[in-house]
Each structure stands twice: as C-alpha cells, then as structure tokens.
Image (cartoon, rainbow, N blue to C red; front, side, top):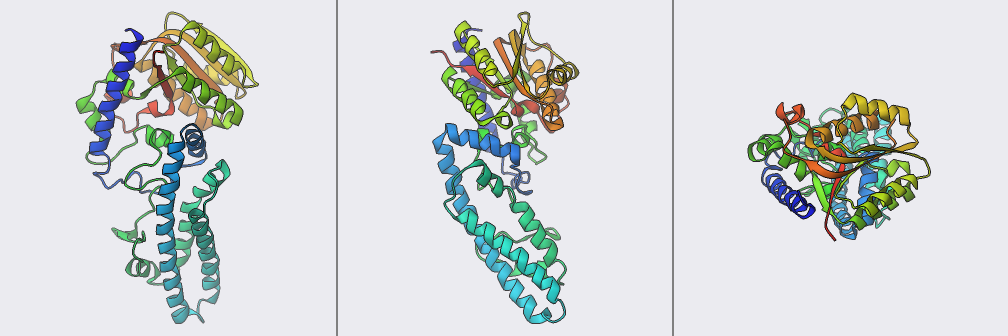
Length: 369
C-alpha cells in the first residue's frame, strides 16, 4: 500500500490498541506492576534514551519519583516505630539481630533520601533506583525474625505508606516507575512491552476479541519521521553497545536507506549487509545461527522488499533469545513494505500465549515528508 495509507493504518491500529489498554489495564489491580521493581539494567538503557529524546518523559519521571519518595519516607517512619517497639520489648534478648536491623534501616534511609533528592537522571543514578526491591526484601527478611513484627508494620503503617497485607503476606512493592499507570509509556521494559498479562480481564484476550493479527502487528509500530530514527541511532552509537536496540524501518527512500546503512557502519564494529529483495522471512533458528556467526561485535543489516507479521514475530523471538544469551550485537531490518494480509497468524498469537514478542522491537513506519 502507498506509504501515506500505511502510516495511517499504523496510527489507527495504535489508537485502537491504546484504547483497549486504557480500558483494561488496572482492572486487575495492576498485579503485573505490583510485583517489585521490574526495570532492570536493560530497562534503564531504554529509559535513559527515551528521556534524552523526550524532555517531557524526564519531567514525568521526576514528578513520579517525588510521589514515590514520599511513600518510601512514610514506610521508613513505620519501620522506625516498629524498631523502637522491638528494642523496648526485646533489646536484651535479641541485641545482635536488632543491630543488624539498624544497619538495614540505615540502607532504607539512604535510599529514601536519595529518591527525594534532585539527583541527575543519569544511567548510574537510574540503576540505583532498581535496587529498592533488594533494600526492601533484606529489611523485611530481618524483621521476620521478630515475632509479630511484620504484622506490626501493617498495623502501624503511616498514612501514604505501602505496608498492607495481601492474603497472608505483605503485599510486594509496585514498580518504582508506576503510579496510577506506567510512567515510561513506550520506553517501558521489554517484559512489560511484550504484553505479559495474566490478569482478568485479560489484555491479550481483549486484543484478540477486537483486533486481527495484522492489525495487532501494526499497532506495535510507531509512525515517526526519518529524523527521529536517525537521532535515535546517533544516540545509540554515542552511548555504546549496551544501548543498541533492534530496529525495523518501513518506507525508506534510497537516500534514507543508505543513511541507515552508514549509521550501522558507524558503530565502530563490523557491519554485515544482506539483501533480501524478495522479502524477509527467516525462522527463529536460522536467525540465531546468523547472529551467532556474526558475533557480539557486529551489526547485521537486512534490506528487504517486504516483511510480514509472522516474520516479525520470528525475528522478535530470535532477538530476545540472543539478548538473553548475551550474543546479540546490532540488528537493523530495512523493509520497503509490510506484507499483509498474512497467510496465517503466528502460532504465538493463535495459541493465545501470555506474552507477545513485538515489544522487543522498535518498528518504525516513516511518515512522509
């Protein structure tokens, strides 16, 4: 289809998917977002790039962290009250355990003060935010040595605190970047972007009900200018291999395609270009073999006449496995057209699997100039 029509189709599909997410997410109590800090080191890289490209994202994250800082400080007040109670009743009997608890409380205080400060949103500081689940876990594990201490946290929880029971256990902390919804939007961690959902109502089930396979694939693309994609790649090249993310770009003209190939070669590593004029379709196994053969210090570049939804799924699965195995270098697929309708949906869609893999890909539909 013509590029303008294709971009319009992507925009319409994204709007439809966003409406489903807005309606469904949160109905389960955000169970997937309330299981600890889900942003890891790879998520920090995604977030830092997003904030560099979008100042509004940085402002939103900063404001959200101020809210979380107040909650963590309220929890610290509760911990201090419970600790004083324990010292009064058990100070002679469990002096060593209380001394260890003081150390862990100090770690909580340090973290609380850090989150409340106006720290620079650098990668190292963002990585420090991912340590909260460990700080919380270590302190709670120590508190459980004292009979009734865990229950006292919930009973004495300060206003605005997070200590409350879910069933017979204290509820886990929600993701550091989650308030009433995710602060990170399109730059959220891959696990979240891959539609990992076991809630009820179920997000993927609703997508199945309202969208067909090709429409769902389109909804995982982003209409963007070529200048945005170029800026993203320049930023990744400047930051280094930890920040490289696989990319699929639709709708390049010859000059733009040449520029993307040039940017891939500018990473300071070997760049392997493979032409697939008939179309791109490789299985997960075939892709993994190519990635292994190229090596961690290479960028694979494919130029193809077309690529469809099933091929993008296979690509995403392969790239995810390569990333987890630590063998993924750079990967760019430049496609002239999206092949639709698909002959059949990918089995991961047809079987209703909990996770759909396209969130691990940055797929861009270039907007006409």
